[in-house]
Length: 290
Picture 1 (tube, rainbow, N blue to C red):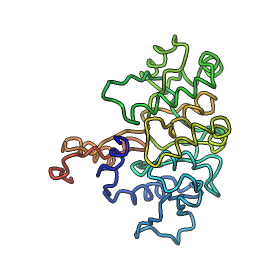
Picture 2 (tube, one colour):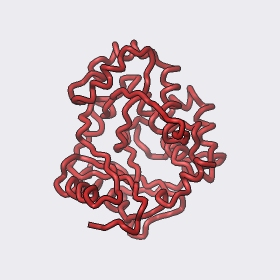
Picture 3 (cartoon, helix red, strand yellow):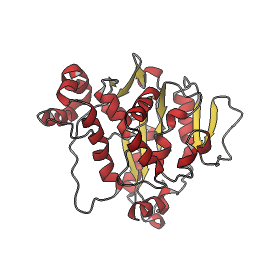
């Protein structure tokens, strides 16, 4: 189907050799991490130093229930992270295109035993052509949040977490969407996620059917929920500490030399703490490495 085709596209499997820089960034800018878990399906990079006692390679079979395997869906992997042995209650989840580029301390990700994050409301809208999982997942996630939480009670109880100066002008989104009775969605930052293992366990206890259905899909599906639900749930419980949005930039590799130079400039000048560099390159023959 269309969703399987999206996951089968070449850019989903293309390797730019950047994974090592994720590890180098953690080693250089977050040496305080207890362990770094590399989740893989029987694949280990030949450059990875397995003698480093901080690095633990975790195979799918070691934490994902057998009935969901084999899987080609990141949703299945993400929604079972809490099953990894030795994983702390408080952990940071990186996709393979997320990098630290500036020094951090532990309270950058967790402060006062709370995950650091930016809870900014958003309104989702889709066009007739937007029928794949990327556009429907946020709606699936927010439907569950509204089933379990009363928006006005949440905003009243955690007012300063939602209306916080650290969000800058982006807070206007929340202000404008306040009158709506239900949560209409949240801005997706797509940066390393500060998460609590107990949040996964709670949602699995409360919504086992929807999680089981998602994990049963071999490829990502328009009926899925994903890791953003964990974030949304933490927002609704007030289980987060507000963080400045400008601490991270979402960037994309593209056919544009100008955009490529922009990425290089941000990284070299350390203009933020972390970046996510998406691979949106379609015309690889014309791409120029700077």
